[in-house]
Image (tube, rainbow, N blue to C red):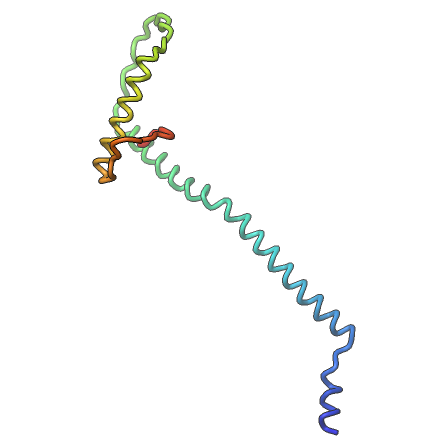
Length: 128
């Protein structure tokens, strides 16, 4: 008889099951909304970090301007129109050769093995 009484007490009714379901699903959706809001806020972190660097740089520039004496204004002279630039294929070949030599010299300084053949340059980016 004691076993039968314990089994009857453990039975949940339909309204109780609905409340449990709604509480569980509600909790999950609230946490998902909170996570999506946090991810949205993470998009602003790089701007905040770059902003502090820009502020420091602008303060240093302002201090440098205060320390340096004002330069005299140059006298403006009439400037003739520049000659149109003509691109020759021979000039481009020389530029490519110079850039390739510079890359190979940089690779040697870094200790990267320089291939004898097959050096492929995919892009050229300006570094500081």
